[in-house]
Image 1 (cartoon, helix red, strand yellow):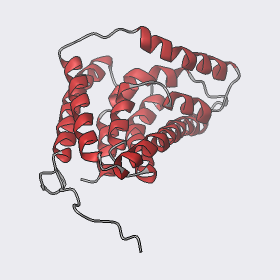
Image 2 (cartoon, rainbow, N blue to C red; image 1 turned 180 degrees about the horizontal axis):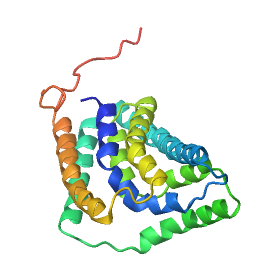
Image 3 (spheres, rainbow, N blue to C red; image 1 turned 45 degrees about the vertical axis):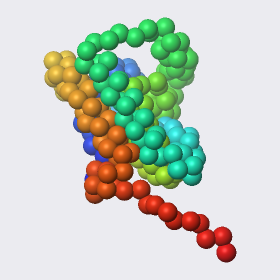
Image 4 (cartoon, helix red, strand yellow; image 1 turned 30 degrees about the vertical axis):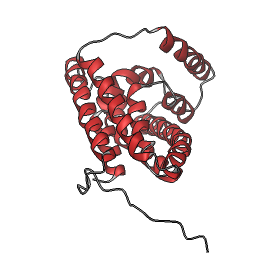
Length: 228
Protein backbone atom coordinates (compact mmCIF):
# COMPACT_ATOMS: atom_id res chain seq x y z
CA UNK A 1 0.00 0.00 0.00
CA UNK A 2 1.44 3.38 -1.02
CA UNK A 3 1.53 6.40 1.28
CA UNK A 4 -1.29 8.04 -0.70
CA UNK A 5 -3.49 4.94 -0.46
CA UNK A 6 -2.83 4.82 3.28
CA UNK A 7 -3.68 8.52 3.66
CA UNK A 8 -6.96 8.08 1.76
CA UNK A 9 -7.96 5.07 3.87
CA UNK A 10 -7.16 6.92 7.11
CA UNK A 11 -9.35 9.82 5.97
CA UNK A 12 -12.15 7.56 4.77
CA UNK A 13 -12.25 5.29 7.82
CA UNK A 14 -11.91 8.16 10.25
CA UNK A 15 -14.33 10.56 8.56
CA UNK A 16 -17.02 9.76 11.14
CA UNK A 17 -14.77 11.54 13.61
CA UNK A 18 -14.84 14.57 11.29
CA UNK A 19 -18.65 14.42 11.23
CA UNK A 20 -18.79 14.38 15.02
CA UNK A 21 -16.24 17.14 15.56
CA UNK A 22 -16.59 19.44 12.54
CA UNK A 23 -20.08 18.49 11.36
CA UNK A 24 -21.84 21.01 13.64
CA UNK A 25 -19.67 23.79 12.21
CA UNK A 26 -20.49 22.73 8.66
CA UNK A 27 -24.21 22.55 9.50
CA UNK A 28 -24.11 26.07 10.93
CA UNK A 29 -22.98 27.62 7.64
CA UNK A 30 -26.09 28.64 5.68
CA UNK A 31 -26.32 28.70 1.90
CA UNK A 32 -26.81 32.22 0.61
CA UNK A 33 -29.05 31.01 -2.22
CA UNK A 34 -31.95 28.60 -2.02
CA UNK A 35 -32.14 25.42 -4.06
CA UNK A 36 -30.58 21.96 -3.87
CA UNK A 37 -28.03 22.73 -6.59
CA UNK A 38 -26.67 25.71 -4.63
CA UNK A 39 -26.63 23.65 -1.44
CA UNK A 40 -24.54 20.92 -3.10
CA UNK A 41 -22.21 23.49 -4.67
CA UNK A 42 -21.71 25.27 -1.33
CA UNK A 43 -20.92 22.04 0.49
CA UNK A 44 -18.51 21.00 -2.28
CA UNK A 45 -16.75 24.35 -1.88
CA UNK A 46 -16.64 23.81 1.87
CA UNK A 47 -14.94 20.40 1.47
CA UNK A 48 -12.57 21.86 -1.13
CA UNK A 49 -11.59 24.57 1.35
CA UNK A 50 -10.73 21.95 3.98
CA UNK A 51 -8.59 20.02 1.52
CA UNK A 52 -6.75 23.20 0.46
CA UNK A 53 -5.88 23.88 4.10
CA UNK A 54 -4.65 20.32 4.57
CA UNK A 55 -2.40 20.79 1.53
CA UNK A 56 -1.06 24.05 3.00
CA UNK A 57 -0.26 22.20 6.23
CA UNK A 58 1.42 19.58 4.03
CA UNK A 59 3.79 22.24 2.65
CA UNK A 60 5.03 23.11 6.15
CA UNK A 61 5.24 19.54 7.42
CA UNK A 62 6.86 18.47 4.13
CA UNK A 63 9.62 21.04 4.61
CA UNK A 64 10.34 19.48 8.00
CA UNK A 65 10.17 15.97 6.57
CA UNK A 66 12.55 16.90 3.75
CA UNK A 67 15.18 18.00 6.27
CA UNK A 68 14.66 14.77 8.19
CA UNK A 69 15.22 12.71 5.03
CA UNK A 70 18.28 14.73 4.04
CA UNK A 71 19.79 14.15 7.49
CA UNK A 72 19.08 10.41 7.30
CA UNK A 73 16.86 10.43 10.39
CA UNK A 74 13.67 9.17 8.73
CA UNK A 75 13.88 5.70 10.31
CA UNK A 76 14.09 7.12 13.83
CA UNK A 77 11.36 9.67 13.18
CA UNK A 78 9.10 6.92 11.82
CA UNK A 79 9.57 4.92 15.04
CA UNK A 80 9.03 8.02 17.19
CA UNK A 81 5.86 8.90 15.25
CA UNK A 82 4.58 5.38 15.76
CA UNK A 83 5.25 5.49 19.50
CA UNK A 84 3.49 8.86 19.87
CA UNK A 85 0.47 7.54 17.94
CA UNK A 86 0.35 4.46 20.20
CA UNK A 87 0.44 6.69 23.29
CA UNK A 88 -2.36 8.86 21.88
CA UNK A 89 -4.43 5.74 21.10
CA UNK A 90 -3.93 4.36 24.62
CA UNK A 91 -5.07 7.64 26.19
CA UNK A 92 -8.33 7.31 24.25
CA UNK A 93 -8.82 3.60 24.94
CA UNK A 94 -8.10 3.87 28.67
CA UNK A 95 -9.88 7.25 29.03
CA UNK A 96 -6.90 9.24 30.26
CA UNK A 97 -7.97 12.86 30.54
CA UNK A 98 -5.76 15.76 29.54
CA UNK A 99 -5.92 19.43 30.55
CA UNK A 100 -8.20 21.38 28.22
CA UNK A 101 -6.93 24.89 28.92
CA UNK A 102 -4.34 24.68 26.13
CA UNK A 103 -6.82 23.46 23.54
CA UNK A 104 -9.34 26.16 24.53
CA UNK A 105 -6.63 28.78 24.09
CA UNK A 106 -5.77 27.40 20.63
CA UNK A 107 -9.41 27.25 19.53
CA UNK A 108 -10.28 30.80 20.60
CA UNK A 109 -8.83 32.59 17.52
CA UNK A 110 -10.51 30.10 15.20
CA UNK A 111 -13.87 30.71 16.86
CA UNK A 112 -13.37 34.43 16.28
CA UNK A 113 -12.50 33.78 12.63
CA UNK A 114 -15.60 31.63 12.19
CA UNK A 115 -17.76 34.29 13.82
CA UNK A 116 -16.32 37.01 11.59
CA UNK A 117 -16.72 34.87 8.44
CA UNK A 118 -20.33 33.97 9.24
CA UNK A 119 -21.20 37.57 10.15
CA UNK A 120 -19.86 38.83 6.82
CA UNK A 121 -21.40 35.92 4.85
CA UNK A 122 -18.06 34.63 3.62
CA UNK A 123 -17.84 32.12 0.80
CA UNK A 124 -18.08 28.45 1.82
CA UNK A 125 -14.59 27.90 0.39
CA UNK A 126 -13.11 30.40 2.87
CA UNK A 127 -15.03 28.94 5.82
CA UNK A 128 -13.93 25.44 4.81
CA UNK A 129 -10.31 26.61 4.77
CA UNK A 130 -10.70 27.95 8.31
CA UNK A 131 -12.21 24.62 9.34
CA UNK A 132 -9.24 22.77 7.85
CA UNK A 133 -6.82 24.71 10.05
CA UNK A 134 -8.63 23.91 13.31
CA UNK A 135 -6.46 22.08 15.88
CA UNK A 136 -7.55 18.45 15.58
CA UNK A 137 -6.01 15.20 16.80
CA UNK A 138 -7.16 13.39 13.67
CA UNK A 139 -5.37 15.90 11.43
CA UNK A 140 -2.28 15.58 13.63
CA UNK A 141 -2.44 11.84 12.95
CA UNK A 142 -2.35 12.56 9.21
CA UNK A 143 0.51 15.05 9.66
CA UNK A 144 2.49 12.37 11.50
CA UNK A 145 2.20 10.30 8.35
CA UNK A 146 3.06 13.20 6.06
CA UNK A 147 6.25 14.06 7.96
CA UNK A 148 7.52 10.57 7.14
CA UNK A 149 7.40 11.28 3.40
CA UNK A 150 10.56 12.43 1.58
CA UNK A 151 9.65 16.03 0.73
CA UNK A 152 7.14 18.80 0.20
CA UNK A 153 5.38 17.40 -2.94
CA UNK A 154 4.88 13.98 -1.33
CA UNK A 155 3.65 15.52 1.94
CA UNK A 156 1.17 17.75 0.09
CA UNK A 157 0.00 14.72 -1.89
CA UNK A 158 -0.41 12.74 1.34
CA UNK A 159 -2.52 15.48 2.94
CA UNK A 160 -4.56 15.90 -0.27
CA UNK A 161 -5.50 12.22 -0.31
CA UNK A 162 -6.23 12.30 3.41
CA UNK A 163 -8.58 15.25 2.90
CA UNK A 164 -10.17 13.57 -0.09
CA UNK A 165 -10.84 10.51 2.06
CA UNK A 166 -12.70 12.58 4.65
CA UNK A 167 -14.82 14.37 2.04
CA UNK A 168 -17.45 11.80 0.90
CA UNK A 169 -19.08 11.20 4.28
CA UNK A 170 -18.80 14.85 5.30
CA UNK A 171 -20.45 15.86 2.02
CA UNK A 172 -23.27 13.35 2.40
CA UNK A 173 -23.96 14.35 5.98
CA UNK A 174 -23.89 18.10 5.37
CA UNK A 175 -26.27 17.71 2.44
CA UNK A 176 -28.59 15.33 4.30
CA UNK A 177 -28.38 16.41 7.95
CA UNK A 178 -28.86 13.54 10.35
CA UNK A 179 -27.73 10.85 7.89
CA UNK A 180 -25.79 9.15 10.69
CA UNK A 181 -27.20 8.80 14.19
CA UNK A 182 -25.27 9.75 17.32
CA UNK A 183 -25.12 6.07 18.31
CA UNK A 184 -23.49 5.10 15.00
CA UNK A 185 -20.99 7.97 15.28
CA UNK A 186 -20.11 6.95 18.83
CA UNK A 187 -19.57 3.33 17.86
CA UNK A 188 -17.31 4.19 14.95
CA UNK A 189 -15.43 6.76 17.03
CA UNK A 190 -14.60 3.95 19.45
CA UNK A 191 -12.82 2.09 16.65
CA UNK A 192 -10.56 5.02 15.77
CA UNK A 193 -8.02 4.35 18.58
CA UNK A 194 -7.59 0.80 17.26
CA UNK A 195 -6.99 2.22 13.78
CA UNK A 196 -4.38 4.46 15.40
CA UNK A 197 -2.72 1.42 17.01
CA UNK A 198 -2.46 -0.29 13.61
CA UNK A 199 -0.98 2.86 12.10
CA UNK A 200 1.45 3.33 15.00
CA UNK A 201 2.69 -0.26 14.68
CA UNK A 202 3.09 0.21 10.93
CA UNK A 203 5.22 3.34 11.43
CA UNK A 204 7.38 1.51 13.96
CA UNK A 205 7.86 -1.49 11.66
CA UNK A 206 8.66 0.79 8.73
CA UNK A 207 11.34 2.50 10.81
CA UNK A 208 12.91 -0.81 11.89
CA UNK A 209 14.25 -1.56 8.40
CA UNK A 210 13.23 -5.25 8.45
CA UNK A 211 13.31 -5.70 4.65
CA UNK A 212 9.63 -6.71 4.49
CA UNK A 213 8.10 -5.39 1.23
CA UNK A 214 5.53 -2.60 1.78
CA UNK A 215 5.36 -3.22 5.54
CA UNK A 216 8.98 -2.54 6.51
CA UNK A 217 11.10 -1.89 3.39
CA UNK A 218 14.85 -1.80 3.75
CA UNK A 219 16.55 1.56 3.72
CA UNK A 220 18.63 2.18 0.59
CA UNK A 221 22.12 1.79 1.91
CA UNK A 222 25.54 2.91 1.20
CA UNK A 223 24.91 5.17 -1.76
CA UNK A 224 27.38 8.01 -1.89
CA UNK A 225 26.49 11.11 -3.85
CA UNK A 226 28.44 11.57 -7.07
CA UNK A 227 29.81 15.10 -6.97
CA UNK A 228 31.32 15.14 -10.46
